Image (cartoon, rainbow, N blue to C red; front, side, top):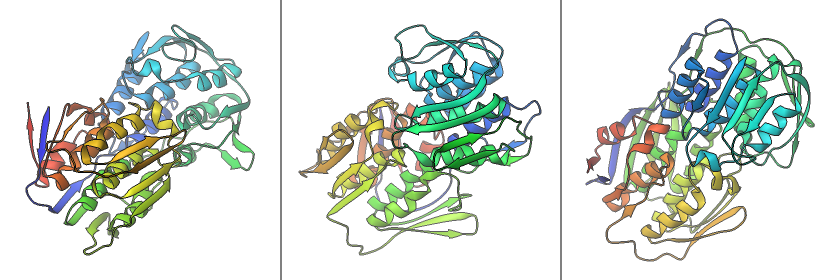
Length: 407
């Protein structure tokens, strides 16, 4: 258990955000497809990125990526074209996260992939071989990572690949991120009104510096929104980013947080005497990772809210909709879940002592922790999950004036 407290509700802080694991993991996969080494700086040291790096380095007959969903999806595609026979598995939670749409798409190109347990779910047995290009029709509502996994191996497939989408696209900015990186390394990709085409070819070995992580920045925006006053300088991060979660800067204007670019940094300020809205509505289809910090802020500040585009949050590291609903009750809010929406309303007095459950979910832990700005002290059952995406989180929190006690 960890106790987090903050005696003062004014925050002045300067932090160097963690590198983007989303960009790092894509670059690692592209590196594995290039015979020459890429010069990469500012790689993520998050748990997910290190699991993927270890898997790519060893390529053992059995690869266990634990709870790293991105690693599992990307490796499913990569191993299908890499010589060798591998079993790809993960944690018990991973075995409940669907993989069927990606497996079906790869099998349509000739991949040799078999389920070793329940059909449609990990673990997988994969025998790598040369794949034959063609047209893929894939359900785009389930996971953008399926599409990114297919795209990154597409230049190495005979004849290239054409991908069309069945249904609306979930997390489109992550696909755009993938394509941007592919083009940076020399792939020929065209996204038009009917889908995405990737020509057969090769990647070039060119140096790259990984951006710092806008998804992690969202928790500092949340902190600023909950503080009485805040000036937070986030170093080496830029609004001109290939990360979709840069939209957090626009979303948090609704909660009185202003952000400006100053040279290579972004500075957050709490707008004093800002009139908070009574109601907030937003479609998170393109930025689902922002639902949790925004949800905690709305609950703490007693802002009624209606979020749409949230269906896929049920199959993340936890069932994030249920987790969010369960935990914001402790802040005095109630919530309801519908097919693709989440509503916050009916505010009451917060719990006298706030003890949060982590659900082994890094984003839940970080959102819960920053509420200590507003409620002075909170407790969380597990502090470890932050290693998955933001291993420096607790150090950064302490350097910003928070106190933590682990028991």
